[in-house]
Length: 265
Image 1 (cartoon, one colour):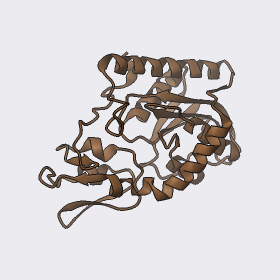
Image 2: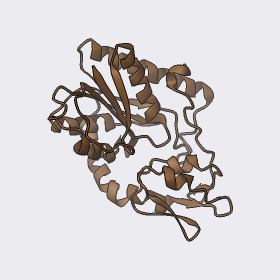
Image 3: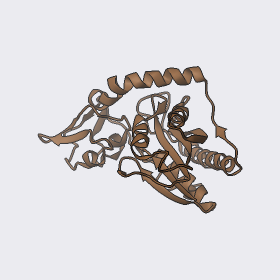
Image 4: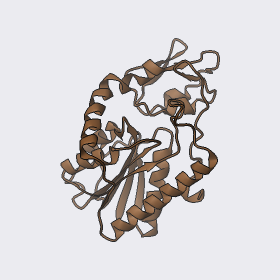
């Protein structure tokens, strides 16, 4: 059997959850490809299972996953394929696993699982009431992710559909809001919220080269942003000099989940 874990990740959380899916599937003799949607550019064919994951953006999945599916995954090339969707978030209620499920269902595919996972907080610098996870909570979160994936996939192998349900009304309201903010807020997030300390910046272009949507350039010896931001947070945490400022203030960078979760629990 052939499967693909297809993911978009900003700071690595969604990738690490995807690796747990991969480990489970390989344990039951699937051949599994890990596919980063920002690096892949060809049609996918003859898969039996797709697992699709993104961070949440305004409580729903990121729209670049929808674009990827439209472009590279067809019913014609994958007639037997089923889907499982997931999202990562650090607080509140997420609806992205369901909005992504709805989108995939409209494409004619069967979705047999959908779940939201609380992941270590990588946007603590935005909210004082949602601080960076302490070590004990960090480790418990990893255990919850592992157990959640195993539980979801056990249902899948038993032929059961497991959908982590939410209020349909709230889901639809958040989805409508996300469509509006995609073009009015999030695409301009970097321009509105982020600056770079020119005294700290070494012009190394790590952020330029690692930006998943090519939204950052080094021009006139300065880091500049355009209006294609995904608000993923990668540039904030990847800068080797910690030169990025959020709302004109420095912050402690998120170190990420340094190893696959299966090696840390």
